[in-house]
Length: 431
Image 1 (cartoon, one colour):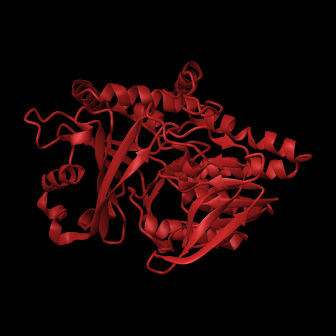
Image 2: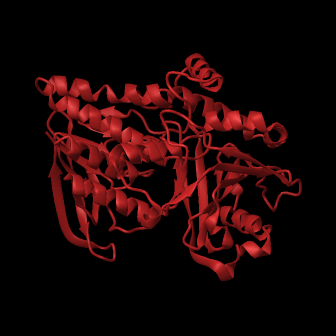
Image 3: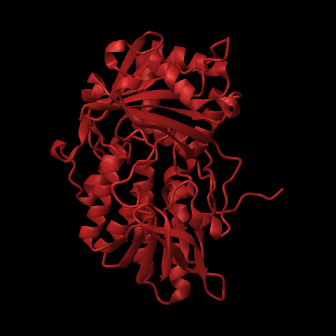
């Protein structure tokens, strides 16, 4: 059984690791060369840390990982601290590490397990056999500056895992396009030299406004300050597309106005900014489906696995990679091509079982808080009742034990059981 993974980020590298660890011959194609920058808050929740621990990925401070105790939510001139819960299935801490370092570390871990990781390979499209089944991919070889060398490669495999991010050239070439009936988000971030580098809480600021709006209406999203532990802080914001102002917003200006309102001693200013202000789209709630076509599975951002609740995608990307690898390993043991494909076709069900109900809840929330009045009421209520805010964070971050061990776990389980799952097995309806 040969597997081809397209994309070397958290989903692709994790898939490469698990496949190699189970003895599958696997090649990972990465468009750029490590280390490379990615737009992200750099926060790793306990769900992501659990995946790292399952892989045996070391994550001590000597490797550049800054540990944190939980979330500190800030609004209405007060703050609520929400420690990461003590659970049997998840560690009681989160981490921060730049994607520049984290992705390189993860790819190196996959290599050490036996995965063949090829950098500077820009995928141009999938290869199909006579029946239309995906059997590989074609890629341009790039030079150190990211330019085409004129050399192309064809990589053939028994199964292809598309993990090449939000734009996913792989999925598009296979006819899988983004849905417009699922929420999207935009994130913008910058690094600043700041004394906030040593924060032991991941801060979320819940009152973002559009400076051009005379009403100063709240936007559906939040700003963040995550201490990186190396003298810098990752400072950014994420906004949902359910806001009436979404298409007209200048996100960089919203970030600039917000950071300008911070205390001067935090040094969120141009003099202390390190690197460019960068932005990216956040593909949410299965915004590209189906997650399986003959010969290919979609993982991570390529599958739209970012949470509408909080814009977090790394843990879901890594988990989806583990699930995909499990199906590939099982398919390798199946009796003949038809049975192999049947095993692979079970992957979307596993993904839907894990996130379908959660994403439905998130889609409802995204629509509700698109109204500035609802967003204002939600912030006011949550900040006034810290116990309620702590429970909401449990729901938003998907941190609960299974089977349920506490009343919070039982409420989350009941809520999930009563919520119809967002689908991921059919293409969007054509108009």
